[in-house]
Amino acid sequence: MGWLIDDFLDNISSKKIYFIIAVCIIGFLIYSNTFTAPFVFDDIGTVYGNNALRKLNLLLEWWSFLKPRFLGYLTFLLNYKIAGWNLALYHLTNLLIHILTTFFVWRLVLLIFETPRFKESYISTHKKYIALFCALIFLTHPIQTQAVTYIVQRFTALAALFYILSVYFFIKARIKKSLSFFIFSIFSMLLAFWSKENAFSIPVMLIVCELYFFSNFRKFINLKFIALWIFFFAVCIKFIFQLVSLSDAFGKKVTFAGENITSQNYLISQFGILIRYLKLLIILVGQSIDHYESPINNIFEPSVVAGIIVLSFMVILAVITFRKYRLISFSIAWFLVSMSVESSFIPIQDLMVEHRLYLPTFGFSLFITLIIYYFSRNKIAKKWPYVFVILILIYGVMTFARNNVWISKVSIWLDAVKKNSNNDRALTNLGGAYSKDKNYKQAQYYLDKSLSINPKNPDALVIKGALIGQQGQLDEALDLFYRALELFPNHIGAYSNIAVIYYKQEKYDEAANVYKKILEISPDNVTVYEMLSYVLVLGGQEEEAKEYMQKAIRLDSSSVDTFKKMEESLKKSRDTKSLESSETIN
Image (cartoon, rainbow, N blue to C red; front, top):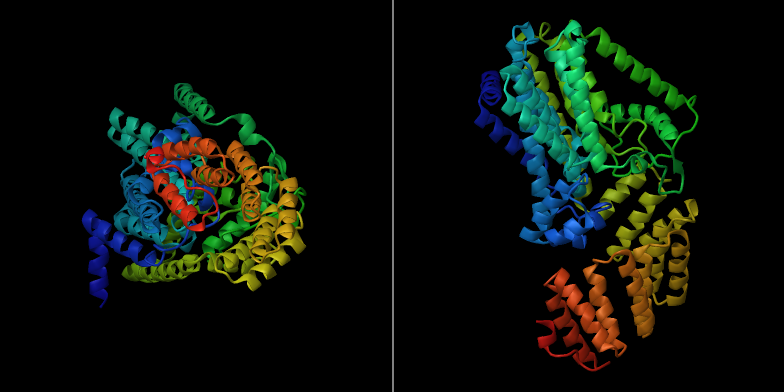
């Protein structure tokens, strides 16, 4: 049996086609239960139902080409063009990006062993297995589910893919002394910038690679060398500032619960969150779609002090291992640098989310691979690869199990509530999920619990209003919607539900005015144009309705079918005269 495993490992670690086949099989197996996982949380609005993703011109109007994440939005637009809102294609695209990133993780580790620092080292004799197991840990670790199964986090996976490609081509350029590979590196860096903001640390990572793999310290502090890197940095920073503004990046943010986040308290909070990230990576428990964290202002908070100690230990370990165990030191440097944009002093609304670990997991995977290699190679001789086989099996099973949580909206939010029963956002979304499933009793329970924790939660007010509105309590529902608007004046969900109630009460003029208000907030919302046209016809304003019909059709030609169905509905109900003939529509 042992020789079969040895032969299998030898083949996939040394032959590119076998590696690709193995990674595809493993990847599809552990993510096979995700292809029907619904759009959830930030998927809704950002991807699902985002009218800007219907046509390229609408995307360019809504999201400038010169802004981060444009590339991710472009892939979502392509998915929509091919399959509409069919879930399978969105999940397949995410999985293929993950598999492709894993491939370049493997190639990057192999390439590192071709650099001057490692080409003649003893550890390079085991480079095939080290690269293989590092890549497979990256592929199978359960923490990666947040960036793969969660559709909207394609931004994260795409940025990681091009981040790794940029580093790969940079090292290749330095080894081959090739300008073309350096150009590929710059191009990959730009694509990473267009995928997500966390890629802005690439210039620092390239310096890290230069220092670790090519230059000795004396050469590194050479004035000409420094001048070259300063010029490169200046160009990168100039380009980054073309993509984002300083005021947007460093401006004060507000959490979902209304707490202010500044650069100072965000940085303080990240020390404690670092320990939680490491716990997720090492102990593999506590994953959640929504780790709601309140900002910490006191640097002497025990969790913050503990985080500072752990971070200091990591930095010291990277320094003391730099000479003898340089690859271990590099894995730590990768982890810290790749986290630096999102886990330092640039405030973000959510203090902790799992997908921020997607790219740093390469550093973690390399670190774990090297630690197991160094500690086991002499004790169990040639059997050390079996340790990785067992570890990857464990990771794969846990990833499959974690993906089962994403099967439905109820299951993913029930899991989040179990992890933190005081998370009012998770409670609200769980109530909304139960309401969608027509389990109104459970929906009411969790919405009431959410509002008992945070009475100023506008989403909970809107979902509860929609729930009681379905039960005929229209006036009480309207009260909840208007309370939500006092808290969040541009809440589209509140306005939409108000318009529906006015429609039910046959107050068509009032409903039309509400829909027009929504269009002020979201001017490319096709569904609102359709509903506005409908209530205008019901109110006898057919000429004005035609104008909005034509706007809807320009945004999405499938609106023609929607209007035809509306016309049929009006004929059957006889509430008003028919819409004009199909000549108006076609």
